[in-house]
Image (cartoon, rainbow over the protein chains, first blue to last red):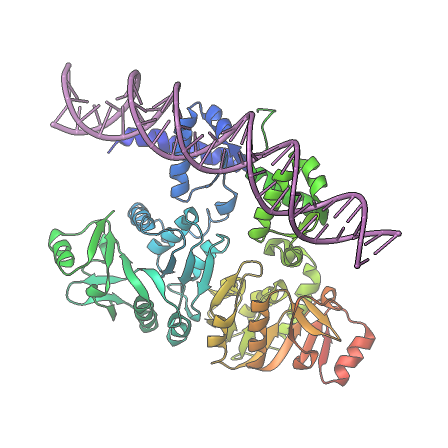
Length: 257
Length: 257
DNA sequence: AAGAAAATGATTGAATTTGAGCAATTGTGA
DNA sequence: TCACAATTGCTCAAATTCAATCATTTTCTT
């Protein structure tokens, strides 16, 4: 909405990151005089960047160290629809509270979300995604992997073995991805092992939150992984009104990010 | 820059760690004068860092976590004794045939081995090591992770949860690492969860192969993980004749790489 | 061009951090 | 075992930083 403002703040953010890369730690005062803006503005910038997981905040300044390693890691298909997925991930982040126990499914949208979790404190994170595990390795959160057979295509752990651990845990919220989503057939994916694990994960969560960009809507993949009714909240970037109304009438909250 | 800038929390923490890496143990007084802050502040820092597992506290001062000193970050550790570990790993590779089902433990020596496995065909690899999993992600081998709680220091999956999958599988050969190895106390490691997983893994293997460089010999860490008699083959880079004879007489084959 | 919306900078009270003093605890050596 | 010294955790005041608020400026929309 305010594109030229964004350019200015975006420029500041770039310079903040650049300065932090040079000098690991900087105080609010140092940064403020380096950029020629007031400390109030800088605090607003730092807090906003921290909430988006771009840096670590502490009393008196900021640092990049904690999540510096994650920056360049894995830029596969994250480029594709990066904007939309980032927005969906940020909306999902708002649903997470400190001390929550959550499940993270595979997929690049959820990988986006994983990178933002540094902004939260003391989470218990259960996941079958090897990439998410990699991102969260140094996060300080409690991290539990489901185990199971590794599927190279999605880089997730799937199949009957994965259910052994999964079935013995319960989480507050499960953040799920999907390959397809239709009114008639519900959720679907391409691999039977993957579907098996998804179904078990969704059963073990008090609340199921589906992250799906608009390209997934109307697609029916190969194996069914659940009904739309299993989803408590759908977060997407765009959705036809008819489908939106239908979902909301059947009890699924829809968030357009 | 501003010359009179008080040290920020993050800055102090970095310098504390850096000082401790140079000088294993430091007293509160030494650290306080080295950083130019009061002892009260330093105690608060040390206690906070201790709670986060970054160092060990004792009456009068602090030291790097007993484990951290040994296990540290992988990039550092892989350099250390790289020659010896590479030779041990190559000797271990000779014991693996195509189509084998094997278990890979954590540790940098075994990570070396994992990197060599591209030379083999159609292996089934079970592991609790996240680093090994990353190395083998694109290898084309069948890869199974045990699951369990992630332990940052060793980057492995440990604890009771890991046993659920482990106990339902059987492998031909288990390639194990260790932190300590003595005639009297057998194998030992620093974490109870880690020990639990190691014991289960060794039980599920027809043949247990221990990879340990000479720095591990004579060391007794914290938790016992098994007897020397549980080991079928020991691969190391150097071993005193007395110990070698003793092992061979009790049925453990010794390979000096 | 006028009005609405957003960003910025200053101000103020609240919250956090720091350092010093003091009682309680721990470790040490006789 | 006892006493002595050192270390620790605690509380309190001073200093710093933070979050919230508001006037002002800038930018966007109509």
